[in-house]
Length: 449
Image 1 (cartoon, rainbow, N blue to C red):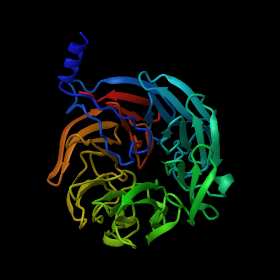
Image 2 (image 1 turned 180 degrees about the vertical axis):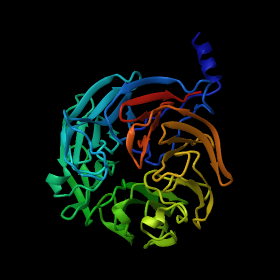
Image 3 (image 1 turned 45 degrees about the vertical axis):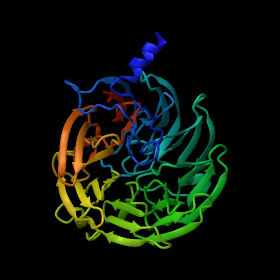
Image 4 (image 1 turned 90 degrees about the horizontal axis):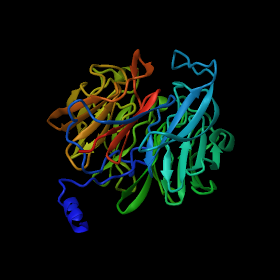
């Protein structure tokens, strides 16, 4: 009987290779989904919803690990309300908390949090996705509260506050830069007039291991990544004044390229391609391709758009001016979302635009029109989760945008988007499912064949 069962298993049409999604942009922090056994298109009537669970407001996407879902949320205090104008920095009281859910059922297992008074623009909740590593989950709040929390007990093991412990100042849009686990270290970008730009902590104790850089003003919103270049590990730190390569073990600077970024908008994560080419994109400044293979970075090409408000207008953008989504690069072509929701394809080595469409984002030209791109490694498909709460399966090639299917899995709830209601939270793809949130609920949807 056991042999017969094994034979059926081995002869089955597919085997699902399952992975968790324990941090920002997944296991390798590259936004690529590597699981197998994923559906080609949605079944009739749409994909199967596994569960929906109420949650508070927030921009932070979920993290999935060890049968648990971790989500940061904000619940406003009694009588409190966010300002109608997202650019107003009024003091708003509420509770920020990290929530742990059962991955199979969506049942809330525990909460960890405290009252936090916001003094930031766009005060609609936490920005930073939790990071799960072993028995700890790390969580950064928008007012600079960094926590290392025991997953089993929901109690803090250690914690820091960037303002009190490092004399930092709150960025305009709050602290958003996801910490990075590297071996025994937790690498964090802090910044501010009196604060170190980057600090590495012992991930178990919170003890400072090293600190590096000085970043004046608003340091920006980019999360650190580590790439291997010429057999050498390089920590990429992109802040509002420069792109810097550091030694991740010591914090020692290896190289620097000065690039002044308007409004410190450095949100999309850096991409490495062809072993030594680093691609960056910013809302006002446009794009930059650097060759970091030598002792000093060399510019391959830089955006021809001029910085400023006019630069982001559709008729003036030349290459890619992304405000949030991290682009995807394949076969020497860049796919990303520009300033007014244009999903674009560019030639990697020249920045030349080959095509654009609004079909995958807001449906028409709209300032900050958005969709997050998650390529599926097993196939030639990309999953796009757009600001209208739609999950799209598409092929992106130099020839154009080919939509395979789409399904609405969430309602837009955030009204801070130039007059329209949106979802601006990156989903997680784990264990054959997609997990996405708005300001009212988090949903788990099966994408298994």
